[in-house]
Image 1 (cartoon, rainbow, N blue to C red):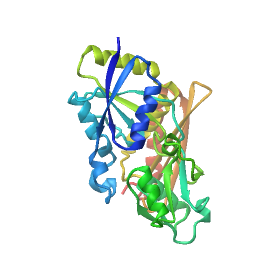
Image 2: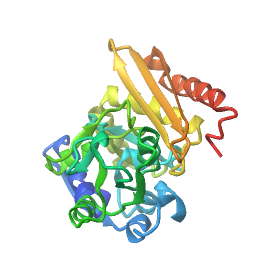
Image 3: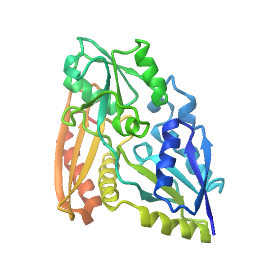
Image 4: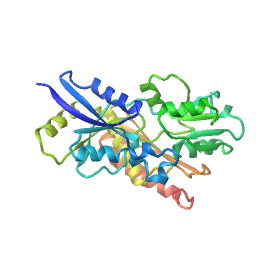
Length: 304
């Protein structure tokens, strides 16, 4: 018997591609119907996310779609998800992680190659702050829109260079740009992870079936990394206004190392630290590292 799943997704090429990647992990006898949603964040491109309500605007309409039973699950770039999920929903599973790196696009290979006062396009306060920390002379300008729109603006000479996530480029088979070392711009929490969000309140057979399906395809290593990274972000009360990096790695199968960094928005101060422990304690490790970073930031006006 064919199981039909309605999947809520943003309408962009990248978002639809991520649904297709999810489909590759599902059984052949599962039929999917994509419910395309144009979110509030997609409609307003001339302002930063911080000014229009935060990165959660990318997912709120998708969450509402599954809560209203207009779709069964929602698929997200996990880095767009707030640390607190909508009531009556959960992360049902995550796919194997893609690249967590950021990429510099343009005629210059590295940040060092850029001319004095070069204009960098990005929508990320994290990328902007850490880039400014490395090169205080750089000018950071707002760049929003889908991947194609951003590349078009670069090609039209509006920016000297732009910064995008490598995972998105990989998924769209766009092989351009150069990876920025993570020591210069450390990764965003859960960057490169595709997440499935489902409901918990419907108590239907389909909801139970979906739980089993996504538990079976959930990537355990990626999930443990996500728990640690989101725990650190939550402890620091991370929002789109906060230049925060949180990046975990599974080592020796049962251990986890978590790197964290926080910066002032102007890049004038950066604080970094790391913690290692058992992967089963991933959430606790995020809390502990968050507390350490907060203690180190006292007097530095990091979170002002």
